[in-house]
Structures are given as C-alpha cells and as structure tokens.
Image (tube, rainbow, N blue to C red; front, side, top):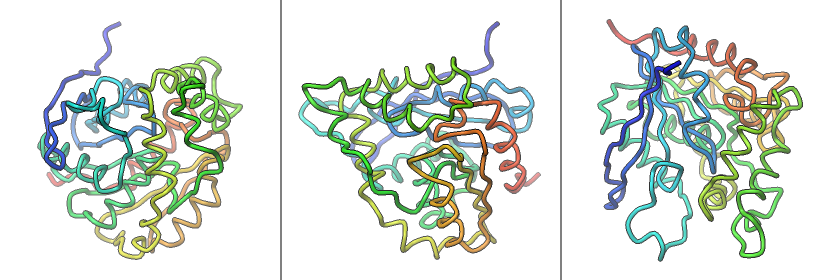
Length: 281
C-alpha cells in the first residue's frame, strides 16, 4: 500500500543561517503543524498522518528540526556544539509557518514541542489559531545527567533510548515501543543532549504563562499517566496557571503518545482538535 504521506524539502533562514528542512504532510483542510519530541523526528506522527478520518478535514504537517533525521545540520556544523535555545526554536517554527504559507495553523507539539507551543502561545499567539501542548509543562529540571547522551565512552543513541524506555507506558504495543526507541537510537551525536539543554535549563516560560489569552487562541494540554518527565501533576500545575486552558490525562500512555501508543492517543488528539476553532469559510 502506498501511504498518503508526502515528503518534501524547503530552505529557510533562521537567525542568518540557511537551513534545509525536511517536512511531510497528509490530508487537506485546516493546517495542523506537528512538532516532534527531543532527539526524534517526524516519524513520530506517521500514524495520525495515515489516519483518513483525521486527515479528511485536517492538513497535518510535520517537519524535522535542523540537525534531526533528514534535516541536515547547517554548513560548518563540525565546528559547533548543538545546543537548542528557546529563541532559535521559536524562530525556526515561525520560519516554517511563513515558508509553507500557513494561515494561522493549529500548533500541536509533544515534549519540547509542547513546551515551545506554550512559549508561542504567550509570545506569538496571532500566528496560530490554537495550541495543543502534549506532555508539556512550564519547567521540568532534569532528574538525569544529560551529558551521558554525548560522551566518547557511551553510545549516545542507546543511552537516550534507555531514558526514553523509562517514559513509555507498559500498555504500549511492543512493536511501537521498539519503533519509538529505534528513532532515538538513530539520533545524531549530541542532538538529544542539545535538545534536552533547552528542555531542562530554560525556565523562562513560567513567568509568561499569565500572558496567554485562551479567549483568542485556545490551549489544550494532554499528558500521559506514565510520563516521568512531565507528570500529570506537572501538566495540571501548568494548565492551572493559564486561565481558560483545558487538560486531559491519558490513563495508559507515556511521554511519546503519538508514537508509542497511537491507538490510545488518537481519541485524545481528536478531542483536542475539536477544541480548536474551525477555519473561516
């Protein structure tokens, strides 16, 4: 069977640096821009992008962040240390929205993608029609040493997969658990560490949550009960700090819902899409 997912490349400029970005899309109608987790790529969204009922009225678009999977690092990367920052992440997402000509898409992000979705809800709400923040919290400091994911005496991909494994629900199908782990095993050297530097060290979102106006752009959070990195308590604390935000807790899902347990995640994602405004006719 030939899948409906179509992959292409687009070149954008982020803070004066040229980036060739790989993106995939499927469906038609309202644009939904989907962001992957730290150290992963667009493959995490493949199940929803192959779901005909979801894509019948929604154009799902997912892209590999620079340095991730099919989006190669920029020229001269061999002389750099990859450390993602909030501003670079914001600028990358906004550049993709502009390059693809998206008119106020829904932004759906997971983990670090959920965190940046909330940052964008606070700082650039007019660029989007709504936000679905999955496994997202205001700030979650590391309970692990991120340097283990980029050391000469350890396999960074396998170390990353070990951390990921602890955050996957025991209810996840075995095949999808290992498919999810494989993505992290393939991560480029230092990329997972660089993403986690953003995720575990930037607490700037905390003071910005009060700026989010859900009357203009709704915010819905989704969290898995088996998530150690962003617990339901973390997500609830964050939702409570955003007036009008809503929250759903998935009983049998962990930190990578669209990848580890697509069937368990699907109804919650469909519910979230239902909370987003329909595009103007």
